[in-house]
Length: 314
Image (cartoon, rainbow, N blue to C red; front, side, top):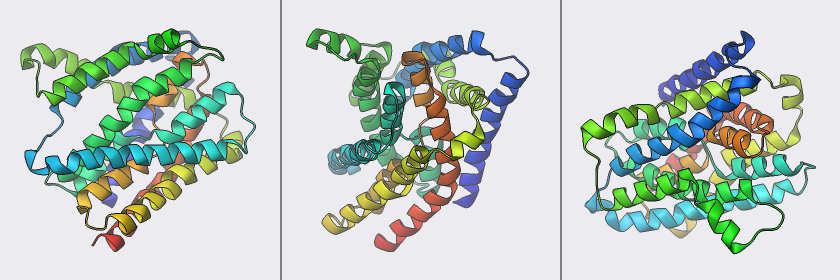
């Protein structure tokens, strides 16, 4: 387990360091950074959704657990939202910062860190099945309500709200979800080049985050209480509460399901939110600070969560 974490965080660090160095030597700068964020958001993200979600593992043997896993995943996301909403009351954040804070309170880095971590804990693949369920639940909110929340004006109509939901990522997600449900796969020869572009998303996102981190003042970041509270909520408080609730109400649940949902709920702040903040708000500084601090703290919190899962679900 520790080796998997080290490998993932090493990859995370190298990719962000690449963006950091590229910024310092002026390869990435304010003039072309907006192009990079738009390219990721409007091209690589949709292609990633269309070429990965339809291939998520589906087992008829565990079909009876999938509906429950979806329900629990949405409950977990709701608890994350409520924790962020409550703690947000105590901080004087501007409009853009509040939106970033709330999105990062809910959405974690479930793909880049979550999937490899859970896959190593359950090498037979059952853990990844439930991790994929959590991903679908998370994506269904991020690319619909999350995007709408970023774009929302002080006054809006139902027509405007529905129009906001019909963005390129929402359409791509809904198409990918239907393909997954009906197990429809694009022919490999057609899909392969698009999948290659889509799979650059994680690397490009982290390189972009590295650029943003080059603009961050470390001294100011570590003094921001809201960032530390967000990390405590995401990494320990909410997943700990969720684990306790599941153990009290449903102690008979399979360990892979509990582990996948609790660990995915406890992932550090999602790198994608920095891209979305830049695109829709023009302000991604707080997002990058959240990613930096929560990722560092998660090297301690994830092994700790796994320890408590083993105590309650031996």
